Image (cartoon, rainbow, N blue to C red; front, top):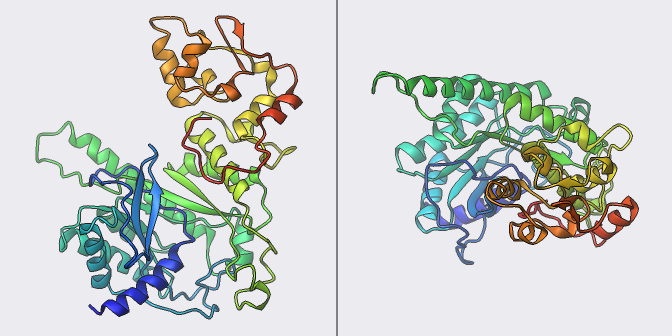
Length: 432
């Protein structure tokens, strides 16, 4: 293996993969990582940091198999008309590279996607062959996340699920109209079809596994199938859809396909900002953005959190009258300010779902409240020790009938709780 050639490929193909946000290593039981280790400066390309749902930082080798692509999607840096360097790994090169990085503790897993350089089944087979080689020939037991290539058959998805911990198929844009405008060679039907195939296969394998628990040992072989489930990615800000459409779509995807996660990626102009006018990647179909909408991306992640963990419906978060998320307060606080008649909530009597509606009280704190209430009454002081963020919660609850501060003026409360500096670009690890 020519080290110089491999270094160049890593540089090209890791840079080409960095705009895909739909990778995380939550849900894998295949290995125990050492968490957060970096591997120095001798070969820094290709390693990205991702976070599990419990907040643990992990390192992934994030690369494309190839950045050669026959599609000409306007938003993509790897589009066929882009005058960029092209490169491709071989299956063995990528397997050897992953194992070498893993053995040196540079990484805890592999995220592998690819440009569409040929028929979808041919591209998908290369990704599968890489994962299969790692598992069967290299003895690799780490995390693997493979991208499903839209248009590939159910047979390919089934095989990919045998070797990978997680699969994902990026929906990219919120509507078929936008997809036809910016990526006319892609098909929304193919993308949703791949998600549906995965969902059906996952249900099939879970049912087989469930039945095997009641059968004599050895009677039914129930292999694992992508135990970390599937995810997808939506690009935010490349087209004119509002937040309501995006949140409604995410809610529908969670319900229909049992997705583990929808990732939101703020649109970054592929030609770069300073050189955009002269760039070969400049395209009149793209918005003339000066910077990616990072605050909007952040608020969408918070709204997504409400959908997945706080039992909110999409219609409660946004409406036809207010189709965009508030840029200055989180969506849970925004809901509370519009529904002050729901408050204050008495924390010594409220059920779990009601506790989750209180800004500043998250799922962990709500469970602690229910557990503590079995033996004693909760006061404001004990509530703070449980992890509640009283800066937000103080306006929306009572403890034994005692107020911290009455919610008398929603305009004033909003001003006090606003993120006036626009801070908060990442999904917070704290509860809101």
